[in-house]
Amino acid sequence: MGNQPSTPQPGTEFQVIGAGLSRTGTASFSEALHILLQGPVYHGGTQATLGPEIEIKSWIKLLSHYPPKSEADRKLILNGLKERFHGYAAATDAPASGLVEQLVELYPNAMVICTVRDPHAWVKSMETVSNASTMWFLRFVLFPVPGMRYFVDYINVLRNQWVYNYGEHEPVTKKSWDNHMKYLKRVVPKERLVFFDVKEGWGPLCKALGKEVPDVEFPRINDGEAIERLAKRMVTKGLVRWAGIFATIGVGAASYMWLK
Image (cartoon, rainbow, N blue to C red; front, side, top):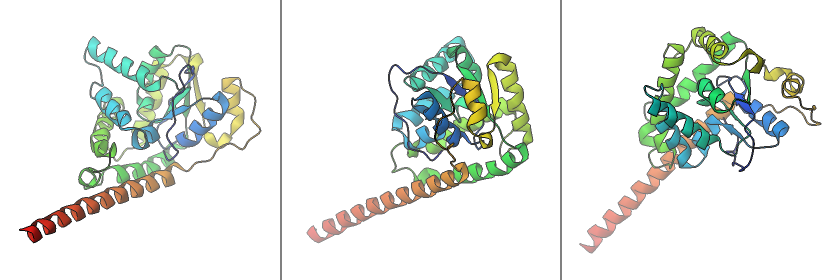
């Protein structure tokens, strides 16, 4: 999270399913894939919060049917994923990382790459995500901001997806990490699954994808700082818009009283 949203390019082949959980270097990984695959990469956190309103609304609709309870639900999820990722070379971060089983079915030729880090450090870093996304005043503050007015509903369906997949609410523990690893090994054929630590740089990633190491530095994006910046930015935007609304109301009321 924290990059600019990507724009799909029709005709782009979908090649990589990013199966790493949030806070495992998914932003850096996304930029690295963009360089290697020479196509747009769908980073879930960035697209849902900074992309067009249709992004976040589509995810709310899709995840409202997860886990699928019928064949109709299953088809709705698959069609929704196909629509969201049309024109992208890869998808990373949540919600895609929790829909790997569906994505493996939808893209049988795509490689599944799970970004990893020390599990205990990951648990600690997830507190930042929880703190930024569960502030009690968000629904009111973000209401004037297009797209982000749906943020609380989006977090709620993400939470339901998480609880179903990993069996716990926030604050998350190493149990969620372990259950995600078990989930991937269960739903992804062994020959298609790769684990990758972004600290290792280009070498292992290029080897997995059969690409030459590019003559540029491996991207380093701090997910935690990006999330904090986004939270402050959106809250500030919401407050400014509320100030404008109240100012407009005040002017209107004053004009009415003067005319009266």
